Length: 588
Image (cartoon, rainbow, N blue to C red; front, side):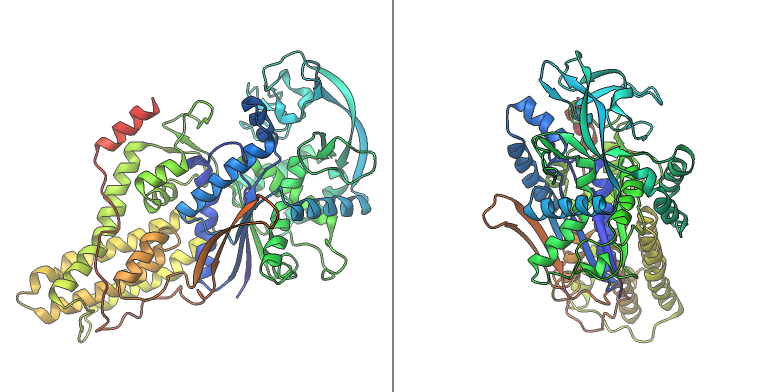
């Protein structure tokens, strides 16, 4: 049994989540976590809403609302979406909690104690019209490295490089005001140059399993460009106050404190469960593995800066084990998903929104398409005709119809029970052996976070069962060879029972339906509960999930002859071809 920490990107609480966000970080994390739980590993999957990012204050300014009101609105919608799609967080919280404030300020203090922070006066864009310094994400302009004309003050979404806002070409405020001027302001800096040897040593040790799109750019940054001090405070009134005297009106910069959320959420989870030090099992145990599921725009922060913060902190509390906080084992960042060949844009309403599409087409249909089309190594594209085609030809025809027709036939011809097979023949044992081998082949791909390939392998095996049934044709031999038909149905049911588990991390809702239809009691993922709760004395709500007894379930079927089957019902809904045209029309 291994301790697996699944850390999931924190969405800015300023807009709804679209399919690009889902396939970029949230769904991959859930698939991976569900598989690890089925294997019997101790999984802790955490995340929450990023409540302090400047996108929240930008939206609040535009709508004439408080930042708190904007954050609380979208935070609740995130929870609604994750429940709808079955994203199984052990804790989904937010950065606007007393716990997160305390942990972030303590990490700041530790880094300062260890000599990795320094104060420096810098030039920062100031808007005379707004009478305030502008945080970097309030400033947009042309990237001075690649020429992209919509770069943000801290990072370019096109080339992925970290930027200095003062060097942007034609800078302007996101509010539209172009009359900006540079003024001096004092800030705290993280001394990344001083931390560079620790980061370089971390990157040089056993990163063969990292994706090329992650390891190559960060190695280039460290070994070619070099790491430089980076400001970790900003002139803001919404966020975590800088824990220093005479630093009023300044807060910890969101890129510095949001990643601390993985640690603070783990601590919050432990306290909520009445085991205050349980988080040590994931953050200090030497054999624990930590995975960070993010989009490619977050690679520098998670593969460079967060390891630097952890290494510089050492250990958090004096009472913690005498070891340093664990550094990332893997950062399986995905590329972007576009929509009909164009970049998804919420401001232009050029998006497929998660809550909307899940409610209209079903969670597993959306999960399936987002997985087969997951942008693991290059950008992918949501295309409505392909969504309909894959739903109908693969999810319904290859898998759903297979399960339904065999179960329905067993009900009609064998009294709703698994038939007695007699002695299995070569074709039967060959099929079961191939399906059983899938637990190793699909599992190895899931372990390596090759989720598209894992799903393709599971669906390939479903195709093998369909071919077996085409050859055995139990629906026809029932009239002339009832024993042979029984043997084929028994073999197919055993294979379907195994495939149900192989597909469960991807399709948890239909897997549970099929689990019951096959006559099993309980939940396929063990004793589980999904809860939302509010902190005492606070409006903050959180999402928790548990899967207490899923140990050892990742193994071939032991379905026995004579077992009573549940009532068969279709697992998926076939979509009319007109759906694609209708959805394209809705997009405009």
